Amino acid sequence: MKSNEKVLCENLRNFKVHYLNTSRKLKKDLLRLQEENERLKSLDELLTINEVEVEFKKNRKTIDRWRIKGLKVYQSGHGKSIPIKIGERDAT
Image 1 (tube, rainbow, N blue to C red):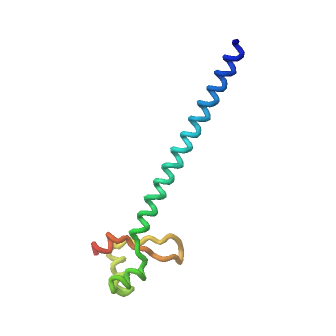
Image 2 (image 1 turned 120 degrees about the vertical axis):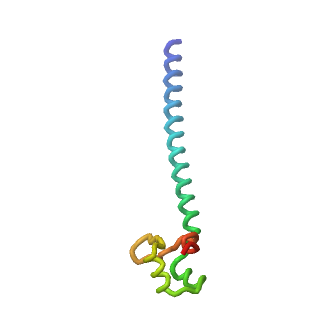
Image 3 (image 1 turned 180 degrees about the vertical axis):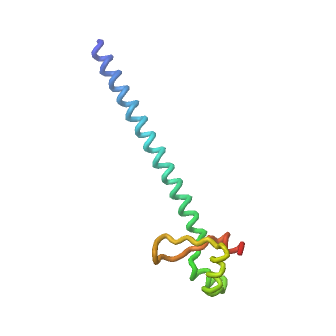
């Protein structure tokens, strides 16, 4: 009888450990996915320099002047497109 109880207790402990570890992993994954979702939402609000030129009929020289005055641009890598946040273009 004692050995059956020990086996059950050991199985229950193993299940608890597995459950807690799985729960922690799922929480981390959920946070990572939420952060990725927020990042992707912010990318939807970005326009490239060329899109700003076409949509607002501004030339590259004007946009460069805005950048000097403080317009923030976000370049994901060297030689990549330079998106501009929509809210920032309205402020300049």
